[in-house]
Image (cartoon, rainbow, N blue to C red; front, top):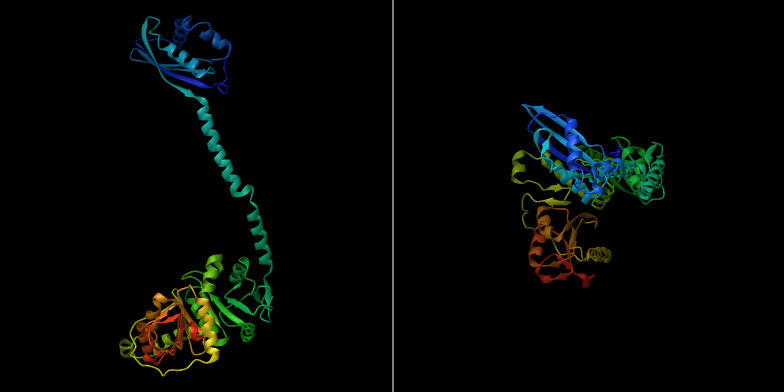
Length: 418
């Protein structure tokens, strides 16, 4: 007899058999061929189908217990669906095997191609995943890898202290001072070439000399160590701005977006000095005095002062703005148009802080001294004027005026006045 390869079969007929007696496997196979002979016509004669290889070897497994025989019948087929179903149904007409009653029931017809198709799909997923993970990097990944290698190669040793630095220290008007070599590498990776490291906790002579010639931004970790380095820099060099990584994070590990966010949110050194001064003042004052007159603290993430107590009203004398002051106020006001933000300035017109105007009055109430002027994208109203009087502010500069200028000792300026 011909045999069909399991590989070429399309369907498999699975049937169960129950026999009221004891029979052997050859008896079952003989009954299948004998009792279906001539039933389905010449084209579906089981013996001929098996000789031509259109159905495979009929597998019968039987088990005899308590005088009864039970088992399974499996028939592989390369016929089409309809022909396979006819052959399967023909098995169920067999009611006797030898001298015993029998019952055959087709359980299902399995489509071998579905199983193969499922295997192909799952295997294809595995292969695609491996290919995407490491076999073929795309052009952007290749470009990033090359760019990173070049930027890392750009690390140089700068000055007599041989500090790790980027290649653009000499030609840049502004430089960023970080803590260590790993911080320099991370900033170089993201395109910042005007960066130099302290390489320790003490301030090297090279940094001190640079601070006399260039605008310096100290960019430190968001932890206690970072704050200690800020104090060391302020005491030994001419630092202009302070930037910090997010709380608990280090500059060497943050992403490009986090770097830009931290540098955009930098604050002037005068503002940090004011914060440090308040901390020292709270430590030096006796506890009883401190409990009566608590000082404001500075929340770095919000870049604003958090009030702890109100300040007694005290109105300063009205002062006219100089031409230079008006020029600075005008430039700031133009930059603030549409931002709904406010700049808080000291008497040298340095920006102490930037806050949204929704938090402006809260910020003013928290300040007892040190604020010279406020420039903001909004209207000057009576409530804001009263708050500014209590904080002894000299200038309020806004978009328009909703109070009379002669009702206060604060100089009120709007766009037309500048």
